[in-house]
Amino acid sequence: MSEKPSDVHATRLDAVRDRARALGIDHLVISSGEDMSYLTGERIDSHERLTALVVPADGGAPLLVVPALELTGPVRAAADRVGAVLRPWSDGTEPIPLVAGALSGRVAVSTALPALHLLPLQTAVDGEVLLASDILDPVRAVKAPHEIEQLAEAGRRIDAVHARMGEFLRAGRTEAQVGERITAAITEEGLTHAEFVIVGSGPNGADPHHDLSDRQIGRGDIVVVDIGGPLDTGYHSDCTRTYAMGEADPGFVEAYAVLEEAQRLAREAVRPGVAIGEVDAAARDHLTAAGLGELFIHRTGHGIGLGLHEPPFVTAGADTVLEEGMSFSVEPGIYRSGEWGARLEDIVAVTADGHRALNSGERGLRLLSE
Image (tube, rainbow, N blue to C red; front, top):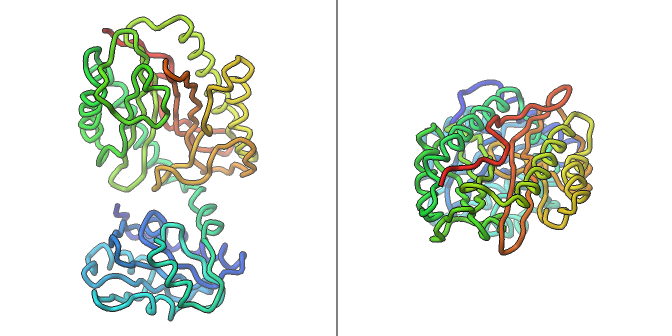
């Protein structure tokens, strides 16, 4: 991922510093991963070697500690965007003192920092070391308008893949063969790669996290297809649709109609000021009233952005209050073990007076020819 230099990253850094000060945090340590990408506009991966952005909450210049062999254009661009001092370290030397020496007071570290580095850092600093989730997560959860447009573009491209499902999903093909064709289509439609491809046919559809298998798709099967991939800016797509291979069993058609209405009710519950748990309840209560509640075995959704799964999480009873700009999936599902599964997923963004769906593909049960 690479974003053009702008005041976007300065604004993000200021927001993180403001929240850190409000929570009594003196320094943040941001490791490689999505938090680093969010703050610097660059995806920096140093594998097992330590990369860390040290951010003083008081507004002082950040410090970017990086392996010397990773001192490339993206790293220099990242440092420039946030006004960081570059501090390279070489194999055979110890980087933890470089980070610890810049820290004082209460320190918050990003959740992506591996234990390989976190434990030595805790030993090396005198102050309290905490997780930075309460600082970073609320800032990242509220997307700026340009981030919403990136998610919408990613959604449009994954919708285009679902629109082509009749090319891929055929009786007689295995899930793996269908998955190969979907994977190729994801890049053909302009996403950088397939982050994941789930094709759950027949009883495999009852496993929400089924991947691909050599099971041959048969006539009459119900097939859950959950796919996603990022744009080159790093913003993700994630969309699930359910297909029937020929005519579906009337009992399933009836159950799917209940699921479709549950998802609609959940989407309609999305607006500023609502506790996110109410979105979950809108879907779950409808399914429960129809006698399908026990078949809904997971949360209703998850935040999405530079991370495929990030806060806020749409779980039962969650009290996070929705704000304009929050973006997340709405994906209730029902799963009858050993028989079939069904899930319907769209990404939505909270607007000033409601929500905007970032997927526009057909939501009804789609019957594919045999």
